[in-house]
Length: 166
Ligand SMILES: [Cu+2]
Image 1 (spheres, rainbow, N blue to C red):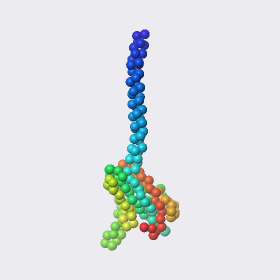
Image 2 (image 1 turned 135 degrees about the vertical axis):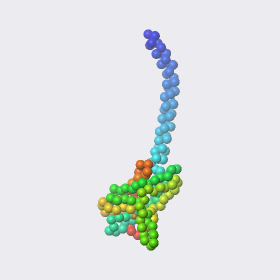
Image 3 (image 1 turned 30 degrees about the horizontal axis):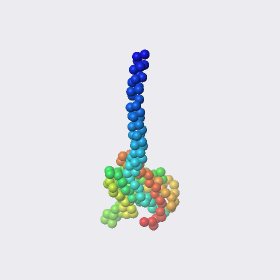
Image 4 (image 1 turned 30 degrees about the vertical axis):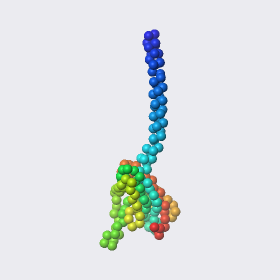
């Protein structure tokens, strides 16, 4: 009897503050839910892909993709790989002219400084695709995935343009 009485009193004493705690938890939850979309956006899109296109050379089993990568974050973004379901080999290359000869250098890592853009354009950086798994048509889009050093990926859709496109 004494136990039941003391329990009742204890519960009665706690009841108002339990309600206050629940109110605070609810407010905290609402604040967290409001934060989640901005946190998700900051993590998913540190790198913005602009103007991605692929130059189709008739009869060739390789092609170059050009685009602009903009690092919208406050940290360096490092591209450590590129893959595509459309081609068996995908690499980041840079064309340079040495002693009148055009050479291509492969990049294992491409660092994009915070707030900076890197342009992949004819005569310079490009993503080289080779070993196409099916024929590529002008006007279609070729999907690629950039792999970043933090393990996240960025999707790219490159529009196929004719060989004389600039
Ligand atoms: Cu190349």
